Image (cartoon, rainbow, N blue to C red; front, side, top):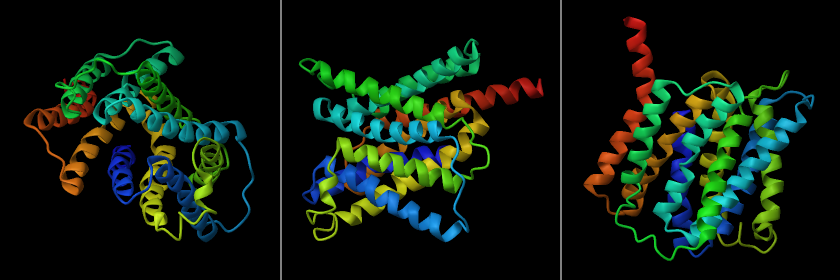
Length: 285
């Protein structure tokens, strides 16, 4: 889960590099899903010896569609919100995911989950560096797209709890990435394939990195990990995305980082491991 979330954290920096090279965010996102699918297709052809039996169509369609919808909604939120605030809005998936788990399983949040969410929320505000951001005059569309992206990502995590009998993780990854590519072609810029941008202008280089860290690794690892850790813990562990996003932007883009942001990252990491610490304490006492 931590590796999958960390992979997502790298994406914002890669997209910024693509934009610095003259491409739009929409073109970069399109390259992520298109090149990502062909990476997965290559893996599928090399590792699978026979044509798989298709099952769990509803789950595959939902997982692929939610992957594309989350990317589209988050991209739209950045149009209206400062990037740091857009990250904070996306990170509302932590409490939304826990809430969904509690509603669907008809239970109350555990003490560890509740405390963890408090630390994650506080750490997110600090790590994203939004304390001194002027929120006046921000269009309402930004808030709507931001919270919608968080809800979509929460549902994506939840859908990955569904196991498909007789289908291995590589085959599931292939079908989810195929659906995601088809869905993103509706919302973004599929014309990059035939207008020369993807290959002639070098967008494929960024698409290769985005496809690896935005499609191949996270979807495969979510498929393996979420059924094992559960939807609630998956949402909490996915908070690792923000510390990675901040750290990579500092190292690669030389963006400034404040002491409060460092404190926020530490708080997020503590909030992630808190449920496990409390569980171990109960076990030994």
